[in-house]
Image 1 (tube, rainbow, N blue to C red):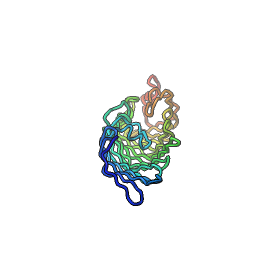
Image 2: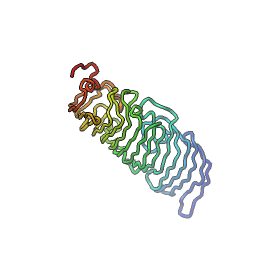
Image 3: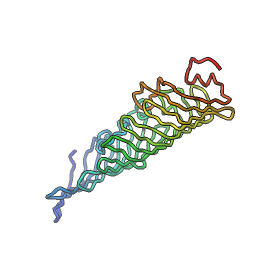
Image 4: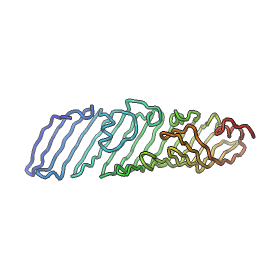
Length: 277
């Protein structure tokens, strides 16, 4: 977008553009730049922007976080021959989607693009109730992720709705997001307190999990209270899933060891029409 600028040229041939002020993706931006002349083998760029549209702005750094349309403020700095921006961003949504990504209200952090590798640091993600901290590397050439993450929520329903409504509790997850853009893998350990699944209460749940869109691997799941416990392992498939956290219509392949648990009520979590003891 056009900007009002002041340009100068020094004795080395460097052209400088100072105090640019104008529009950037329907927001405002102030910019300064320099270009080495007559051979353009080095240039600098500094932009402070505010209220810019999020979709094209994130595209500028080569990354689509999958959150709703919003507005972004932040900075972009580059120096060198090949465009390699770095800076920080602070995003606020202006729309709300139907799932957990669609419920993201804010997203902030710093970025550093070197070649095809985008480093994200101190990434803070918030919904109305939940928050996550992350950081790591996004490979834009091979479309892969490597992001350690810690997530906390006082309401599991916010994370799983609308795909699974009958889950309650306060949760924390520590692990990693890896894999590809199209099929990311979330692996780590989940801890849930004040838990209830299909109305079945448990004081606490801990689980080591590996989750992809179509498959959840349960390596060590323990649930219960002082009076009884249940331990599970195995897999749960979601063959019809269209997106992460779409856990409707599961296919169970689990082994369970129960201690002082009302078996019929417990089994009905997975098979609602079960009757037995």
